[in-house]
Amino acid sequence: MMRLLVNRALQAIAVVILVTLFVFLTTFLTGDPAGLMLGEGATQQEIQAFRVRMGFDKPLIAQYGTFLWRALHGDFGTSLYHQEPNVRLFSARLPATLQLAALSLTLGTILAIPAGVLAASRKNSWVDNLIMNVALIGQAAPVFWLGSLAIMVFSVMLGWFPASGRGTWAHLVLPTLTLSLFPLAYNVRLIRSSTLEVLGQDYMRTAQAKGVPKAALLFKHALRNAIGPTLTVIGIQMGSFVGGSVITETVFSWPGVGRLAVQAIVTKDFPLLQTIVAFLAIGFVLVNALVDITHSVVDPRLRY
Image (cartoon, helix red, strand yellow):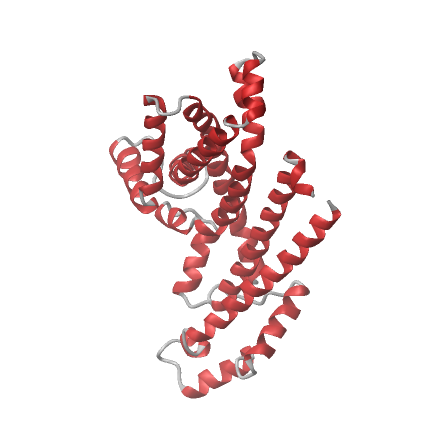
């Protein structure tokens, strides 16, 4: 277990460094950051003074080293657009994104487990075909289309739920349902496939021959051995949900990190964007490391 923890820690550090370096370099590939941040109306003297003040006149590797050194000390700079510390802006938006991501992933997982096991237990039946076809539609439908459709039907036509904002439980319904559909559809297919593979093992046939009840056979024996790949995917989904819910947050005007990232791109607030990406990368690798450890606890064979 200790070896696993050390390996995951080293991998996490390497991933965070590579991701932040990539984002840092791509900032300069889009053009001169000073000119982009100040706009077309800025004079050459203003651009040069801004470059010196921000440290853009130094070599890229020196700038990145300064960024890492300040980040290690908790200094991620100040937003050019909001004129507030980037960490404060990120922290203020993070709870909304975590709330939406956690509820969506929980809903998608809770519904996917029984649906996937049921489809596997009724292989090639009309129940299996129905569940798989619905899951296919859920994976194929674009999030922006689902969100717009949900607003049109449940907000505009029926008036059941608010179309935007955050505050009450009613504001959570539409964005949660929209965001949870893709992981629900994907996890149903994955759980079905993993369960079918486990059900074909000799020890499962032996347990069935000994008269183990079907419910216990499916949910106690088959599901525990089939849940491993799903746990890994859930970890990836959770990490991607935190930064990947940009479309959902934009459609429903949800005040989260994804919408803040879009605003940073539109306003060319590169220091804020770099801070968001750095924290999202850290969160992503931490979630995946936790999932790997959880997976090794569920399946002891992975410890060796």
